[in-house]
Image (cartoon, rainbow, N blue to C red; front, side):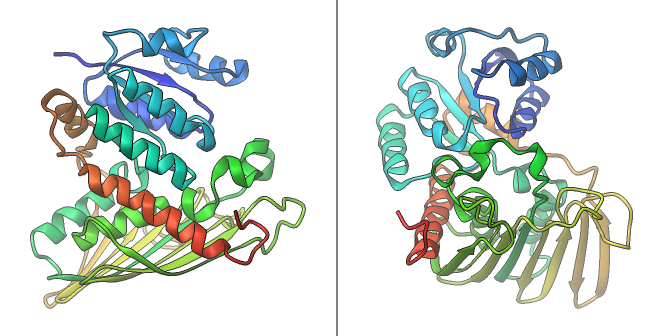
Length: 338
């Protein structure tokens, strides 16, 4: 059975990855809604098979469409996801899936009430072959039991390419809620845990006083019963780096460790998706660029079979809960405190 899907909201470029993920897995893209003509023109040219509609209700009320995907402005995503689930559709949203605890609580309630799938495409895990291969190696016992992770998510600001909502706290949700949701999900996944605790967190605007709503750096210490971790995200990637960010992840186990250099190995190996493994036998390197990305296939199987093979629903929610908790803790006593 071919699954049909549609997109509502194309404000973040991650929507292209979401659509491509579902198409690679065999789903059929049948339509999209965008309120912005300029975004719609570019998006429509990329996917001519999917006509633009003038009202999202056309997509929500079409019984043949089984999945709604969205990369709308973060503050608007919750309402889109809620409407989709209430119309009997499963959801694949960009991160963050929501930007407030009120939205979080309502999405959890409606997901449970409707039995629909609410999923976040945490692309720094599911769309990165090196991260997928690290999971395969850890599952095989390559580094023993995981005890600590260090996740870095630097990004390039490139001010001229960012819309106004990007700098408005109550539209993008804060740096830990937004960017670091990737790192919180990876911490839970590599820890083999469904939930975790935020021990400490901070956010700041250190270098962009002309954009007071922007948080350009944030970090957090986290833990589960058996693991600890550290997360740092920022908007300080220098213009000289040939990509948008030097994303790294170090996973410490009882019998070795893995370091991922996801997007670039500075002054080292060319390309991306570099994995380094150190164990009792020595130092090993793997180019992971050819590793299969199973998320899309698994997600479509879950839609068909009502299973949770792509990502457990609880971990999906709790990664965002950790992000929201970290954001709240970090903002206490700051100008962004809600």
